[in-house]
Image 1: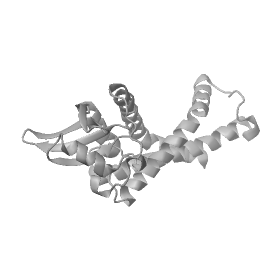
Image 2 (image 1 turned 180 degrees about the vertical axis):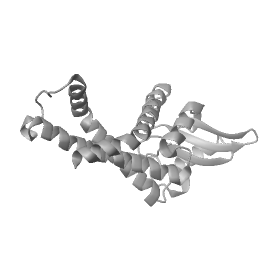
Image 3 (image 1 turned 30 degrees about the vertical axis):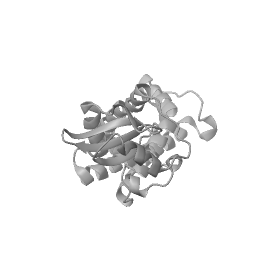
Image 4 (image 1 turned 90 degrees about the vertical axis):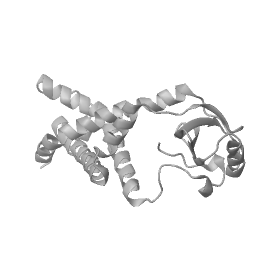
Length: 216
């Protein structure tokens, strides 16, 4: 049964898994780039009201203040020139630099989350993640059986070169794949079940030190 599930599920799911994995790889470089672009600033227990007052001295038409996953504070605002976002120093409310994400990142983010298909696409991505989880579990069962039981899990695989490579690479990647699929399913569930959006509004926050870090 494990072999049938592993084989027939892998065939239709392979393309989607590869696309999601490659787009996720591209997205994984953005936090590194963001961290290198500007260091985060510790705020202690500064209140949101205090931060808002400082930012209002510099910006007009403030729509939102948010904190990114990497600790950067970003103000979103509307002006006569249009909509913009700047990274700010939360201690002074002064602009550090423009906050912009590349067109490639934005494109990849939408593709990775929903394949450009809205909620239907998000559901499809969740199904892909679940398929990869099932593939991992069925593959683990096959690997354990092939190696002669759990006590032989770390012994060298036997068979043809392709079989050995598949077994050894799967063994190395198993923990990462399981962690990735479980977190993907969790994020998908939060997307559908939670009414909380990915940004933090000034009016609903208490202390900056207790911000829930947002996904941007």
